[in-house]
Length: 246
Image (cartoon, rainbow, N blue to C red; front, side, top):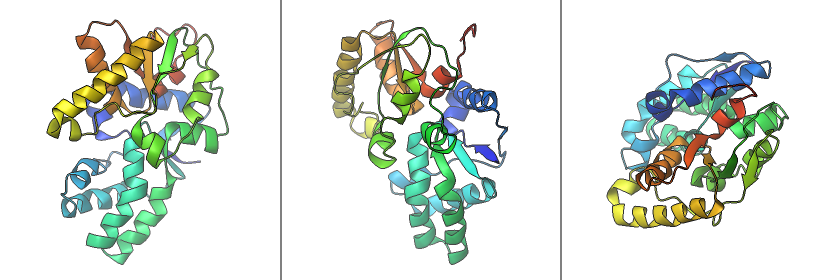
């Protein structure tokens, strides 16, 4: 099986350890992970803010960069949803039939990490060890677009040493939403305050999610309040083993 890592521009720039964790985890499970050097942004930011014609070169580049792989794994439900739900829209509206065919070939193979582990590899116990009290935030794209369901929780429940606790009002948005947080700061901060209340109410040491964009937003709020609660991407928890300094 040829597996490619689609790291996403946010992770590549700010959270490279998450991409490394995905590779570490999949290699531990016996798979080789390739990193196509030609990959760039999936175009989500441009598409969502109305620059749809400008998204076309990124759709074309994505289809070219990830052509020929059996699975394209990403630690971002947000970007996976962009590729699977919107790349064809852009290709149809601004591209040509050949690009639509390329997108139709590649896009269905793009999977968020928990989808790949549970649905393709058929595993939930990945040999992880993380002796901390953890709560899980289901990000909006994973919940409402990809519909990953309980896959991340099934993976977390199998982690040795973990104390997994429920997050109050887990399905409510954290208020990030990309440029939403910039264009509607007061609303975003109010939503974040509700989410922080839930995180602190869980008495967790660590908040886990499958998108670093949301963890950046929530983690910033937790840090500014000096709560001592950390944030960790799902991939980083699953990649941690007994004796691992992480």
